[in-house]
Length: 288
Image 1 (spheres, rainbow, N blue to C red):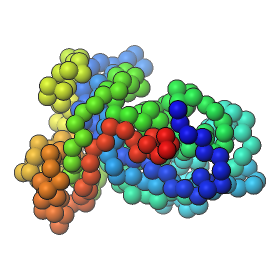
Image 2: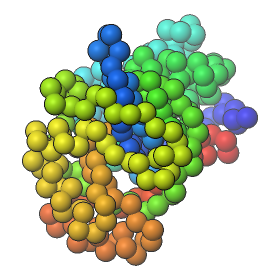
Image 3: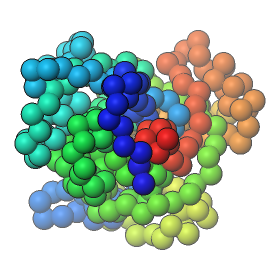
Image 4: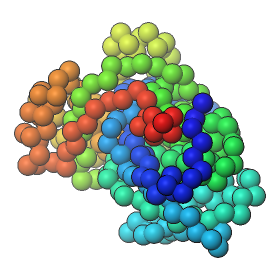
């Protein structure tokens, strides 16, 4: 049972919005409406944006500082807060302060995670008493990755990514490269040569090592920087693409190995040292 936050000090707290990786991605079909049917594994990492919610008396929802290039009305935290108000009739307002650490356009889910943190925390601060299931349902209207951040646990996902089952992959050290490009996800999923008929597998198959990403070939053809990052990272360990990218990652059993790779790659790439976690830092904090 999640702790209920309603006192004034909770409004001043910083709330984590963690990144995620797709540890594998299989495209096993396509629906009549064009959406692809997927099998993927989500795992959180301990790299986070941080969000602070400030109460306001006039019922308005606003950002303390807009992200450059993103109109305030389009910001996912604003849309999440407005959605909660619309669904519940809540008259309260909030000013949202976002400390942005996650790279944009890298496939780490930063915007989706910010939205999920907004849904979960304002549900408590505004005492709306919506269930996690309802918040996941609302989150799906904001973006396909929002439900897993609301769910809060490493998950095996199917469908268009919304059918989630808890899973416990190894929590390894990670080195993540963010190439200096933004991958257009729609373009990748529209590509003529994308594999769309991979055989469905079971969780046991993933654990046994079937961890391919069906998007790698198409992404590398269209984005040479992603291919170069995979080559550079593969010197140290098996390099993988998360989702459609642009970020690539490698897993390490020890912090020392990961640190060695991190330091070697720093001079050329934007690189992050992190660790995989199977419980979202946000869920850990909400549980108190």
